Length: 209
Length: 208
Figure: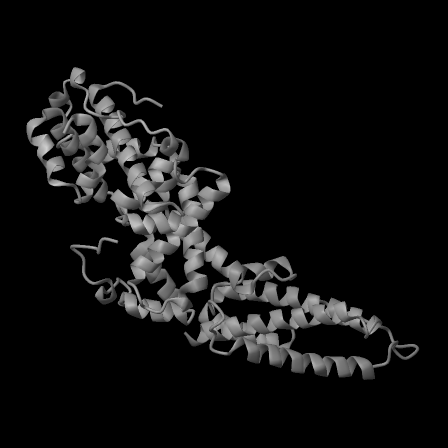
């Protein structure tokens, strides 16, 4: 996974309460409520954002955020420090979301798309005047969020895990039980679909379902 | 290399592992160059989205509620006991849980002996008064400790103590009626465990 850039080393950050993350982890292991709250404050945005993007639904994202931190409460004693705490918590959160998607019966990876590839999807079409529809400097956060939310669950999961959250294909393949090749293929198709949606938004036409 | 071949190889190019001829194609093809630029822009903008959303404040309240419920597990206890304060957190309280269970069992053993020795029926002429499910002197001392720490929590602890005392009373009655009833004995142990857990949470929070 990509390391966090532009931030203090999490273990050294001092929160409003005066506790560093490392101190909060030790406190949470001993059952200290304040320490647990410090960990929540430090990581709530990352966990919630992940849940929201992978489900596209605020209520589900809140439920899954709650479940992820409940899992943290139950399992924090097992954290040994082999990885960064944020990585450990993030992986736990991803598993919570993937379990939820499996229970809903939603395809985590769009196998239909894999078995019936459309190599032309989103490809350059000279008749649309490609230069005028360049996305360089034209993607804002709201449009991109909307476009991601409109992806099918399988595409959305792969795209969020790789391009938003920074997981590598081997990590995604392990989490989702697919091959690395499948992960790469799905990501590419997700990006092509997003390009198609964003170009349609730019032309003022509604995105295709 | 034509555009179709380039697009098939595009995932590798974006991952940084494409052959040189793949990298050459966009230099002479405006459409494919535009495609590459667009996909790179999408990825770049996506990286900025991580941790950009904030959950509502009610999410934390719900987490605390679920942690409270989880702290006591899901045994058959009166409903109020499932919503105890987060106090001791997980099983790593200042007083080990096993010690609390031992204390509960010792107390239970005393209670069993007392029940066996006590007459099954009161002497003739003596009115039997059923004790109300209130709190005893030890409970009052605990409530005093809780009140010093947080007056607002006293009522909640009192309600929990009353509920668990009622459970203990009912379970003791069942054991009196049938001392060999293992289910009744188990219920009595559970009720004492719950009371022990209440004391631990209250005392541990008071030490923080």
